[in-house]
Image 1 (cartoon, helix red, strand yellow):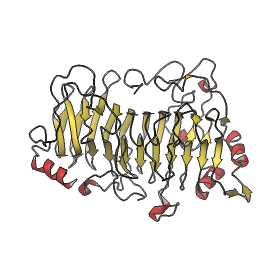
Image 2 (cartoon, rainbow, N blue to C red):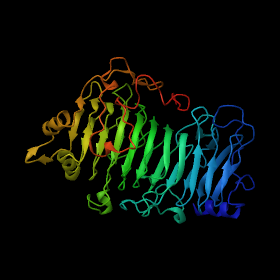
Image 3 (cartoon, helix red, strand yellow):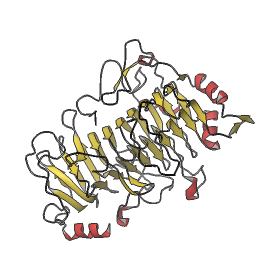
Image 4 (tube, rainbow, N blue to C red):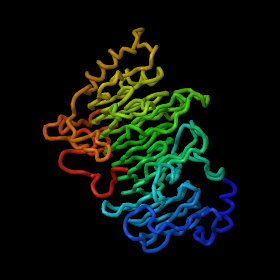
Length: 467
């Protein structure tokens, strides 16, 4: 890592390095990296540190070489329709560091695309995109994961309204970079990102690790898609306290990352407060407390060739609180909703956490429990592993439905998932925004449950499928 950074520093010119510096192992610029229309100009190579404002335009394709850091209060502006690519020999990672901003404003007709430059793209050709803000967290992670330079490894602060810029109509394809077991770059990593940041219409495709991971912070998001990523689609920890509305999670039945002997599994949601192996109490503040609405999460549904490393639709553990409302979680493999550790279970029983006004079912033909509580735990002296008490809460005051056909068009067609509801589907009506922070003005008070209604498709044009 030090050698790469030093090379970037030696080559700096106005804060950005292009083709003026090269390594003997560099491959030639691709003729048309990432596919699409004919490239007007060959790709400038981008390395090292960007410490002054830069403007990337759609008439060029920019190639990330290794770790690229935007810092010193600089703003990186990326025009609609611009492509940023990476080759597998360097797995480029774009880091927007504390105080800097990215302004990537794509459109539905011309999204900003981060993708592979390889002829046959594969997960891991691109490292990923990392936003680093100055909002609060609980210190569960002391530094940024994934091999970033030590000079840019700290994150978070005390400004929950911090602004790291805008990602709008952006695709991140073939990302992920495993430096060590449990030490990875995700598709989009958000470290202490504040509520002043705009994240709207972002898709992560075929990532080698998590699609979206939130490390603390308060950023609010809308219109997120995780498609065919190997590990967790929405991974939340470190005291994240934001809100998200309209999101999609679709899993490739055969694709998970290498778990080894860790016992880890891949889930649609995996949400923690802290990792107790770091020496922290599960009650460490601020406590992770995401408030989520209008999600559609599709598991592998026990399709032929399903990986043995698939887990739950939702895995809430390690002291987290949560609200997931007006949502659909179907086709989960080991089980639907998994609660782990006493404090997580307690928040659910007391009503500060809720799976609210939603639909849940497990994969056809599997023994997975729809509601699955950590074995050996008890509630008021009664074993909760049989889930009776939890199920009563779910179908009673929390108004959720278990095992109901939600009548989506073709949700398990992985190449072209039909996620909109059919005529007559129960999800077309009945959404509720009367529980806790769901009353907040951030949430559109729509009538439908799940990510899509029956008449409009916010994924049209800019999102990609079949990869």
